[in-house]
Image (cartoon, rainbow, N blue to C red; front, side, top):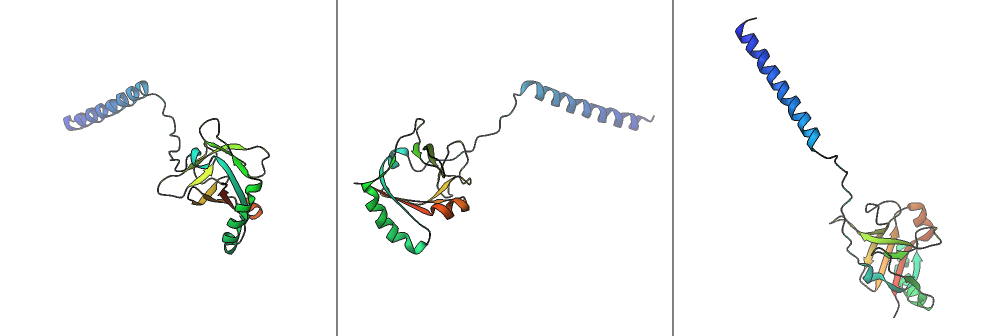
Length: 159
């Protein structure tokens, strides 16, 4: 072999040995990487929604104002939102006979959703918050089949 060729082989072998050493030392010292949990904020706190609410629903947007008035009358038999055991609040999910703990969740600057705390914002079982001012809460189911049955839910805080 010529001197230049031998020098080239040595340089390549040295580079490969360096890469192999770097790979093996990295694998020995680093811990397995866990996937990151979804990061979202909770713009509506449990304290803001706990209480008694009149409830009504509509399917057509032109019925929204009339439905809000109906929800005010629903305070005679209010929908009660209690505190959840882990800092959320208790609401019924679609077709469930027992309430589940839910939270508000958002990835800013996106829309706000209400749903199970261990799921990312905007999953099919969530409800999108269309309006919340402390006195009126309007929620739309994301699951189209559920939305077709339940409509857009209007909650009005009872006095």
